[in-house]
Length: 385
Image (cartoon, rainbow, N blue to C red; front, side):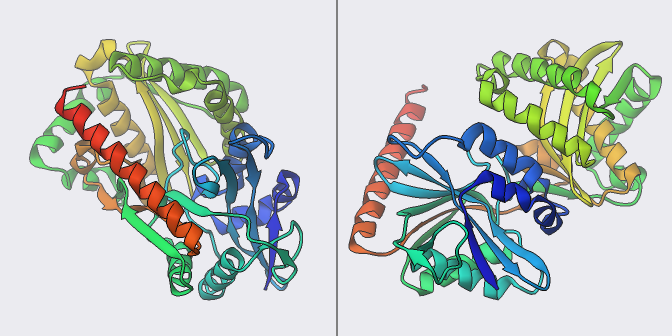
Protein backbone atom coordinates (compact mmCIF):
# COMPACT_ATOMS: atom_id res chain seq x y z
CA UNK A 1 0.00 0.00 0.00
CA UNK A 2 1.21 3.51 -0.85
CA UNK A 3 0.44 6.65 1.17
CA UNK A 4 0.25 9.98 -0.64
CA UNK A 5 0.17 13.27 1.23
CA UNK A 6 -2.02 15.73 -0.68
CA UNK A 7 -1.75 19.47 -0.17
CA UNK A 8 -3.22 20.53 -3.50
CA UNK A 9 -6.99 20.75 -4.09
CA UNK A 10 -6.63 19.99 -7.79
CA UNK A 11 -4.86 16.71 -6.99
CA UNK A 12 -7.53 15.84 -4.43
CA UNK A 13 -10.27 16.52 -6.98
CA UNK A 14 -8.62 13.99 -9.33
CA UNK A 15 -9.49 11.30 -6.77
CA UNK A 16 -13.16 12.32 -6.58
CA UNK A 17 -14.62 9.28 -8.36
CA UNK A 18 -12.65 6.76 -6.29
CA UNK A 19 -13.33 8.79 -3.16
CA UNK A 20 -17.06 8.76 -3.88
CA UNK A 21 -17.04 4.98 -4.04
CA UNK A 22 -15.65 4.81 -0.50
CA UNK A 23 -18.68 6.68 0.95
CA UNK A 24 -21.86 5.43 -0.79
CA UNK A 25 -24.02 6.03 2.29
CA UNK A 26 -22.17 9.02 3.77
CA UNK A 27 -22.49 12.02 1.41
CA UNK A 28 -21.03 14.43 3.99
CA UNK A 29 -17.76 12.47 3.87
CA UNK A 30 -17.55 12.64 0.10
CA UNK A 31 -16.05 15.05 -2.44
CA UNK A 32 -19.34 16.75 -3.32
CA UNK A 33 -19.53 18.10 0.23
CA UNK A 34 -15.91 18.45 1.34
CA UNK A 35 -14.34 19.89 -1.83
CA UNK A 36 -16.79 22.84 -1.89
CA UNK A 37 -16.14 23.26 1.84
CA UNK A 38 -12.42 23.64 1.16
CA UNK A 39 -13.05 26.14 -1.65
CA UNK A 40 -15.09 28.36 0.65
CA UNK A 41 -13.54 27.78 4.06
CA UNK A 42 -10.06 26.46 3.54
CA UNK A 43 -8.46 28.33 0.69
CA UNK A 44 -6.43 30.63 2.93
CA UNK A 45 -2.63 30.85 2.55
CA UNK A 46 -0.42 29.57 5.35
CA UNK A 47 0.41 33.06 6.55
CA UNK A 48 -0.37 34.93 9.71
CA UNK A 49 -1.83 33.37 12.85
CA UNK A 50 -4.66 31.39 11.25
CA UNK A 51 -3.49 30.13 7.88
CA UNK A 52 -4.88 26.82 6.57
CA UNK A 53 -3.27 24.15 4.44
CA UNK A 54 -4.81 21.05 2.91
CA UNK A 55 -3.24 17.93 4.46
CA UNK A 56 -5.08 14.86 3.16
CA UNK A 57 -3.58 11.38 3.43
CA UNK A 58 -4.67 9.06 0.62
CA UNK A 59 -3.82 5.35 0.77
CA UNK A 60 -3.71 3.40 -2.46
CA UNK A 61 -3.44 -0.31 -3.12
CA UNK A 62 -2.44 -0.57 -6.81
CA UNK A 63 -4.75 -3.54 -7.62
CA UNK A 64 -7.80 -1.69 -6.22
CA UNK A 65 -6.93 2.00 -6.36
CA UNK A 66 -7.89 4.29 -3.47
CA UNK A 67 -8.67 2.25 -0.33
CA UNK A 68 -8.77 4.97 2.36
CA UNK A 69 -8.65 8.72 2.73
CA UNK A 70 -8.05 10.90 5.81
CA UNK A 71 -9.75 14.20 4.81
CA UNK A 72 -7.77 16.66 6.92
CA UNK A 73 -6.32 20.13 6.84
CA UNK A 74 -3.85 21.94 9.12
CA UNK A 75 -4.61 25.30 10.71
CA UNK A 76 -1.87 27.46 12.23
CA UNK A 77 -2.94 28.86 15.61
CA UNK A 78 -1.19 31.12 18.10
CA UNK A 79 -1.91 29.03 21.17
CA UNK A 80 -1.84 25.41 19.99
CA UNK A 81 0.56 25.53 17.06
CA UNK A 82 -0.41 23.61 13.93
CA UNK A 83 -3.72 21.85 14.45
CA UNK A 84 -5.04 18.99 12.30
CA UNK A 85 -8.80 19.09 11.71
CA UNK A 86 -11.33 17.34 9.50
CA UNK A 87 -12.50 19.12 6.38
CA UNK A 88 -16.08 20.24 6.98
CA UNK A 89 -15.66 21.35 10.59
CA UNK A 90 -16.95 24.65 11.93
CA UNK A 91 -20.23 26.40 11.22
CA UNK A 92 -21.16 23.97 8.44
CA UNK A 93 -21.55 21.28 11.15
CA UNK A 94 -20.55 18.19 9.19
CA UNK A 95 -21.62 15.10 11.17
CA UNK A 96 -20.32 11.54 11.51
CA UNK A 97 -16.82 12.54 10.51
CA UNK A 98 -14.36 9.72 10.02
CA UNK A 99 -11.81 8.10 7.73
CA UNK A 100 -13.57 6.24 4.89
CA UNK A 101 -11.91 2.92 4.10
CA UNK A 102 -12.43 -0.10 1.89
CA UNK A 103 -13.61 -3.11 3.94
CA UNK A 104 -10.76 -5.37 4.95
CA UNK A 105 -8.08 -2.68 5.02
CA UNK A 106 -8.91 -1.11 8.38
CA UNK A 107 -5.99 -2.50 10.41
CA UNK A 108 -3.27 -1.74 7.87
CA UNK A 109 -4.71 1.69 7.11
CA UNK A 110 -4.83 2.65 10.81
CA UNK A 111 -1.21 1.61 11.32
CA UNK A 112 -0.01 3.54 8.29
CA UNK A 113 -1.88 6.69 9.32
CA UNK A 114 -0.52 6.48 12.87
CA UNK A 115 3.01 5.97 11.55
CA UNK A 116 2.63 8.93 9.19
CA UNK A 117 1.35 11.18 11.97
CA UNK A 118 3.84 10.35 14.67
CA UNK A 119 7.00 9.66 12.72
CA UNK A 120 7.17 12.29 10.02
CA UNK A 121 5.02 14.19 7.59
CA UNK A 122 5.50 13.20 3.93
CA UNK A 123 5.92 15.80 1.25
CA UNK A 124 3.11 16.21 -1.27
CA UNK A 125 3.10 13.32 -3.71
CA UNK A 126 5.71 11.30 -1.81
CA UNK A 127 5.31 8.04 0.04
CA UNK A 128 5.76 8.02 3.81
CA UNK A 129 9.33 6.71 3.56
CA UNK A 130 10.45 9.96 1.91
CA UNK A 131 9.60 12.51 4.53
CA UNK A 132 10.50 15.56 6.53
CA UNK A 133 9.92 16.77 10.09
CA UNK A 134 6.48 16.35 11.67
CA UNK A 135 4.30 19.34 10.84
CA UNK A 136 1.47 19.22 13.39
CA UNK A 137 1.13 19.86 17.11
CA UNK A 138 -2.43 18.75 17.89
CA UNK A 139 -5.27 16.77 16.33
CA UNK A 140 -8.60 18.47 17.08
CA UNK A 141 -11.40 16.31 15.68
CA UNK A 142 -15.06 17.17 16.40
CA UNK A 143 -18.21 15.26 15.53
CA UNK A 144 -16.35 12.00 15.01
CA UNK A 145 -18.47 8.91 14.41
CA UNK A 146 -17.71 6.62 17.34
CA UNK A 147 -18.47 3.65 15.09
CA UNK A 148 -15.90 4.59 12.44
CA UNK A 149 -13.57 1.56 12.63
CA UNK A 150 -10.50 3.27 11.19
CA UNK A 151 -10.66 6.39 13.36
CA UNK A 152 -11.00 4.25 16.49
CA UNK A 153 -8.04 2.11 15.45
CA UNK A 154 -5.93 5.17 14.63
CA UNK A 155 -6.54 6.56 18.13
CA UNK A 156 -5.57 3.20 19.65
CA UNK A 157 -2.42 3.04 17.55
CA UNK A 158 -1.47 6.60 18.55
CA UNK A 159 -2.07 5.84 22.22
CA UNK A 160 0.07 2.69 21.98
CA UNK A 161 2.87 4.78 20.49
CA UNK A 162 2.88 7.21 23.41
CA UNK A 163 0.71 9.98 22.03
CA UNK A 164 -1.59 11.87 24.42
CA UNK A 165 -5.12 10.92 23.37
CA UNK A 166 -8.19 12.53 24.91
CA UNK A 167 -11.66 11.42 23.76
CA UNK A 168 -14.95 12.74 25.17
CA UNK A 169 -18.56 12.19 24.23
CA UNK A 170 -20.15 14.86 22.06
CA UNK A 171 -23.81 15.36 21.23
CA UNK A 172 -25.38 12.23 19.77
CA UNK A 173 -26.64 11.77 16.28
CA UNK A 174 -30.17 10.34 16.11
CA UNK A 175 -31.41 7.81 13.56
CA UNK A 176 -34.73 6.12 12.85
CA UNK A 177 -34.60 2.65 11.30
CA UNK A 178 -37.44 2.75 8.77
CA UNK A 179 -39.82 -0.16 8.26
CA UNK A 180 -41.23 -1.18 4.90
CA UNK A 181 -44.47 0.80 5.14
CA UNK A 182 -45.67 4.11 6.56
CA UNK A 183 -48.47 2.44 8.52
CA UNK A 184 -45.96 0.15 10.18
CA UNK A 185 -43.83 3.13 11.17
CA UNK A 186 -46.78 5.06 12.61
CA UNK A 187 -47.72 1.96 14.58
CA UNK A 188 -44.36 2.14 16.39
CA UNK A 189 -44.99 5.65 17.70
CA UNK A 190 -46.36 6.37 21.15
CA UNK A 191 -50.13 6.42 21.44
CA UNK A 192 -50.33 10.21 21.75
CA UNK A 193 -47.87 10.83 18.91
CA UNK A 194 -49.61 8.29 16.70
CA UNK A 195 -52.90 10.09 17.27
CA UNK A 196 -51.32 13.43 16.42
CA UNK A 197 -49.75 12.12 13.18
CA UNK A 198 -52.98 10.54 12.04
CA UNK A 199 -54.87 13.76 12.77
CA UNK A 200 -52.41 15.68 10.56
CA UNK A 201 -52.64 13.04 7.85
CA UNK A 202 -56.41 13.50 7.80
CA UNK A 203 -56.12 17.29 8.05
CA UNK A 204 -53.65 19.49 6.12
CA UNK A 205 -51.85 16.58 4.46
CA UNK A 206 -54.92 14.59 3.50
CA UNK A 207 -57.04 17.57 2.41
CA UNK A 208 -54.47 18.89 -0.03
CA UNK A 209 -53.95 22.13 1.90
CA UNK A 210 -50.29 21.23 2.40
CA UNK A 211 -48.29 20.65 -0.76
CA UNK A 212 -44.67 19.45 -0.75
CA UNK A 213 -42.42 20.71 -3.56
CA UNK A 214 -39.09 18.96 -4.18
CA UNK A 215 -36.20 20.15 -6.32
CA UNK A 216 -35.77 17.96 -9.38
CA UNK A 217 -33.68 20.10 -11.75
CA UNK A 218 -30.82 22.60 -11.34
CA UNK A 219 -32.95 25.56 -12.39
CA UNK A 220 -35.19 24.96 -9.36
CA UNK A 221 -32.28 25.28 -6.91
CA UNK A 222 -32.11 29.10 -6.57
CA UNK A 223 -35.77 29.42 -5.57
CA UNK A 224 -35.61 26.46 -3.20
CA UNK A 225 -32.43 27.68 -1.49
CA UNK A 226 -33.86 31.20 -1.19
CA UNK A 227 -37.03 29.79 0.38
CA UNK A 228 -34.99 27.71 2.82
CA UNK A 229 -32.80 30.70 3.73
CA UNK A 230 -35.83 32.96 4.30
CA UNK A 231 -37.65 30.48 6.53
CA UNK A 232 -34.47 29.58 8.38
CA UNK A 233 -33.77 33.29 9.00
CA UNK A 234 -37.28 33.99 10.29
CA UNK A 235 -37.18 31.12 12.72
CA UNK A 236 -33.69 31.85 14.02
CA UNK A 237 -34.36 35.54 14.50
CA UNK A 238 -37.62 34.79 16.30
CA UNK A 239 -35.55 32.75 18.77
CA UNK A 240 -32.89 35.44 19.16
CA UNK A 241 -30.29 33.43 17.24
CA UNK A 242 -28.02 34.37 14.33
CA UNK A 243 -28.85 33.80 10.69
CA UNK A 244 -26.32 31.39 9.19
CA UNK A 245 -27.37 32.03 5.59
CA UNK A 246 -26.54 35.72 6.01
CA UNK A 247 -22.88 34.68 6.15
CA UNK A 248 -21.37 34.82 2.69
CA UNK A 249 -19.18 31.73 2.94
CA UNK A 250 -21.98 29.62 4.41
CA UNK A 251 -24.44 30.57 1.66
CA UNK A 252 -21.82 30.23 -1.07
CA UNK A 253 -20.77 26.81 0.15
CA UNK A 254 -24.33 25.53 0.04
CA UNK A 255 -24.94 26.88 -3.44
CA UNK A 256 -21.92 24.92 -4.69
CA UNK A 257 -22.55 21.78 -2.65
CA UNK A 258 -26.23 21.62 -3.56
CA UNK A 259 -25.46 21.67 -7.28
CA UNK A 260 -23.04 18.76 -6.99
CA UNK A 261 -25.26 16.75 -4.68
CA UNK A 262 -28.29 17.22 -6.92
CA UNK A 263 -26.33 16.07 -9.97
CA UNK A 264 -25.46 12.86 -8.11
CA UNK A 265 -29.03 12.35 -6.80
CA UNK A 266 -27.78 12.92 -3.24
CA UNK A 267 -29.87 16.01 -2.46
CA UNK A 268 -33.47 16.24 -1.30
CA UNK A 269 -34.33 19.90 -0.99
CA UNK A 270 -38.02 20.61 -0.51
CA UNK A 271 -40.44 23.16 0.82
CA UNK A 272 -44.02 22.82 2.03
CA UNK A 273 -46.77 25.28 1.18
CA UNK A 274 -49.85 25.57 3.37
CA UNK A 275 -52.73 27.12 1.45
CA UNK A 276 -50.18 28.36 -1.09
CA UNK A 277 -47.81 29.96 1.48
CA UNK A 278 -44.31 28.51 2.07
CA UNK A 279 -44.25 27.53 5.76
CA UNK A 280 -41.45 24.96 6.02
CA UNK A 281 -38.34 23.87 4.13
CA UNK A 282 -36.15 20.78 4.46
CA UNK A 283 -32.56 20.37 3.28
CA UNK A 284 -31.66 16.68 3.29
CA UNK A 285 -28.77 14.63 1.96
CA UNK A 286 -29.11 11.00 0.98
CA UNK A 287 -26.82 8.02 0.68
CA UNK A 288 -27.64 4.59 -0.70
CA UNK A 289 -30.10 3.87 2.11
CA UNK A 290 -30.11 6.78 4.57
CA UNK A 291 -31.67 10.23 4.50
CA UNK A 292 -29.84 12.89 6.55
CA UNK A 293 -31.98 15.81 7.78
CA UNK A 294 -29.28 18.47 7.63
CA UNK A 295 -31.10 21.82 7.84
CA UNK A 296 -34.62 23.22 7.97
CA UNK A 297 -36.61 26.40 8.27
CA UNK A 298 -40.16 27.26 9.31
CA UNK A 299 -42.29 30.38 9.35
CA UNK A 300 -42.81 31.33 13.02
CA UNK A 301 -46.03 33.06 12.02
CA UNK A 302 -47.58 29.64 11.36
CA UNK A 303 -46.47 27.82 14.51
CA UNK A 304 -50.07 27.03 15.43
CA UNK A 305 -50.22 24.86 12.28
CA UNK A 306 -47.05 22.98 13.32
CA UNK A 307 -45.29 23.37 9.96
CA UNK A 308 -42.12 21.60 11.11
CA UNK A 309 -44.13 18.58 12.21
CA UNK A 310 -46.01 18.53 8.91
CA UNK A 311 -42.78 18.75 6.88
CA UNK A 312 -41.20 15.91 8.88
CA UNK A 313 -44.21 13.69 8.30
CA UNK A 314 -44.25 14.44 4.58
CA UNK A 315 -40.52 13.90 4.02
CA UNK A 316 -40.28 10.81 6.22
CA UNK A 317 -43.28 9.24 4.50
CA UNK A 318 -41.66 9.98 1.13
CA UNK A 319 -38.42 8.32 2.31
CA UNK A 320 -40.26 5.13 3.27
CA UNK A 321 -42.10 5.07 -0.05
CA UNK A 322 -38.76 5.40 -1.87
CA UNK A 323 -37.42 2.39 0.00
CA UNK A 324 -34.93 4.14 2.29
CA UNK A 325 -33.82 2.13 5.32
CA UNK A 326 -33.03 4.97 7.73
CA UNK A 327 -33.86 8.60 8.48
CA UNK A 328 -31.14 10.45 10.37
CA UNK A 329 -31.90 13.61 12.39
CA UNK A 330 -28.16 14.16 12.84
CA UNK A 331 -26.35 15.84 15.73
CA UNK A 332 -28.12 17.31 18.76
CA UNK A 333 -29.92 15.81 21.74
CA UNK A 334 -33.24 17.61 21.30
CA UNK A 335 -36.13 15.63 22.86
CA UNK A 336 -38.26 15.65 19.71
CA UNK A 337 -35.92 13.18 18.00
CA UNK A 338 -36.64 10.37 20.44
CA UNK A 339 -40.31 11.30 20.03
CA UNK A 340 -40.01 10.11 16.41
CA UNK A 341 -38.49 6.83 17.67
CA UNK A 342 -34.95 7.81 16.70
CA UNK A 343 -32.12 6.02 18.51
CA UNK A 344 -28.88 7.77 19.61
CA UNK A 345 -25.69 7.26 17.63
CA UNK A 346 -22.66 8.33 19.70
CA UNK A 347 -20.20 10.91 18.45
CA UNK A 348 -16.91 11.98 19.95
CA UNK A 349 -14.63 14.97 20.20
CA UNK A 350 -11.04 13.73 20.02
CA UNK A 351 -7.81 15.59 20.70
CA UNK A 352 -4.32 14.15 20.33
CA UNK A 353 -0.89 15.58 21.14
CA UNK A 354 2.22 13.71 19.88
CA UNK A 355 3.67 13.21 23.37
CA UNK A 356 6.83 15.31 23.76
CA UNK A 357 7.45 17.58 26.73
CA UNK A 358 6.30 20.54 24.64
CA UNK A 359 3.16 18.63 23.71
CA UNK A 360 2.40 17.99 27.37
CA UNK A 361 2.69 21.71 28.00
CA UNK A 362 0.34 22.45 25.11
CA UNK A 363 -2.14 19.92 26.49
CA UNK A 364 -1.97 21.60 29.89
CA UNK A 365 -2.64 25.01 28.34
CA UNK A 366 -5.61 23.62 26.42
CA UNK A 367 -7.06 21.91 29.51
CA UNK A 368 -6.69 25.11 31.53
CA UNK A 369 -8.51 27.04 28.82
CA UNK A 370 -11.33 24.48 28.83
CA UNK A 371 -11.67 24.77 32.60
CA UNK A 372 -11.80 28.57 32.48
CA UNK A 373 -14.42 28.52 29.73
CA UNK A 374 -16.53 26.05 31.70
CA UNK A 375 -16.38 28.29 34.79
CA UNK A 376 -17.38 31.35 32.75
CA UNK A 377 -20.20 29.42 31.06
CA UNK A 378 -21.55 28.15 34.38
CA UNK A 379 -21.31 31.61 35.93
CA UNK A 380 -23.25 33.14 33.07
CA UNK A 381 -25.89 30.44 33.34
CA UNK A 382 -26.27 31.04 37.06
CA UNK A 383 -26.56 34.78 36.42
CA UNK A 384 -29.22 34.17 33.82
CA UNK A 385 -27.16 35.60 30.96
